Image (cartoon, rainbow, N blue to C red):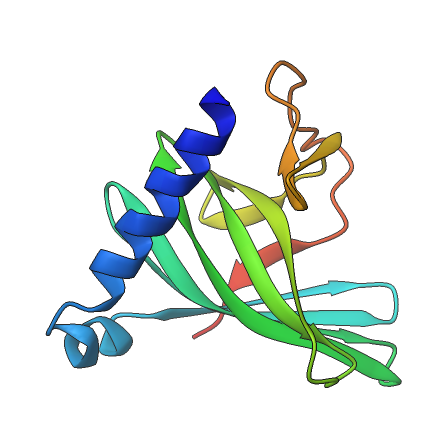
Length: 143
């Protein structure tokens, strides 16, 4: 129940934040990152503040299909945790999955973690650390 309340508070805060009148200013401050892993390419336009982050993420799988959507979350030190809301293969159905990134040496490292599903919402297991040692994507800032 506690996790449900935390998630609900997070959703309400993002909805409130998204309705602010400074949206045009925030779009101008986004930084472009790109990562390549074997034949897959990911492009990430992100705005990071002291407390939160938001942006768009697109993952192109070997040029055959792609996932694209919005990322929002909170910043704790050099770790970013949030939600990736995306369309898979360009189909109308929207999916949500948790996302974790580590800011290190000017790069963003995408971590992996054990997940649970509660009330049809995926999230990282609370007491299991996120693995950043063998990431699928390491995002580098583009000029």
